[in-house]
Image 1: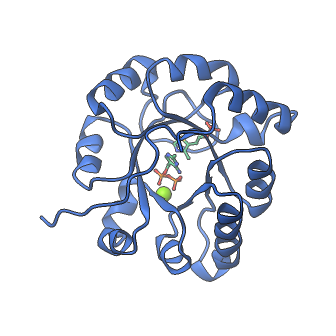
Image 2: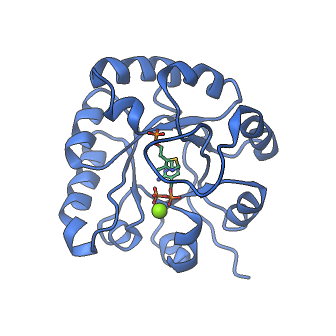
Length: 211
Ligand SMILES: Cc1ncc(COP(=O)(O)OP(=O)(O)O)c(N)n1
Ligand SMILES: Cc1ncsc1CCOP(=O)(O)O
Ligand SMILES: [Mg+2]
């Protein structure tokens, strides 16, 4: 099998909000967030292209690591910092094209087998989830829990790692104690009664990541 390579990203990506609009990207980059993902689901490329372009421009303006979820063709076309893909996406996306374009690649994993499969692609980071039950996405698997997460982090050594799924503000210290380099959150920010206060506290705990 052809061995692909992707540029490295920071070993610690810090707080990593995953959001569904350019408005959220702009708000959060304005607070000092340095790792962020645009995650728009189930639209045609033509419908999301303008948002992808705007998000990438904001990422560059704020000198942030902006990952595009799913829309890897648009991410290549417009020069995103990186792309995030799931296991099913791996079957259909052209990983070689992402590699050749020099984009970072993040891959989702939910168990040991998926971790091995992801590692064989040499991605820039490995996401591990879901750690806790989540209301944000229907998951076919059970939550991994903190012990399993800690085990995976040990196995992955110096790899850049991201934890996702049900990570509320009060759970962040325990998640970080596993040694994971980043906490990815949706509802902890977007459903917070005061998103600014929530983001400030999350940044205090998880940081902005390594340079
Ligand atoms: C950082 C991060 N981790 C995991 C996911 C989930 O990606 P995926 O499995 O492709 O599912 P969708 O987000 O596409 O529904 C993610 N987006 N970000
Ligand atoms: C996109 C995704 N992938 C695995 S869990 C998840 C949703 C995480 O959302 P929340 O932080 O609200 O639990
Ligand atoms: Mg996906």
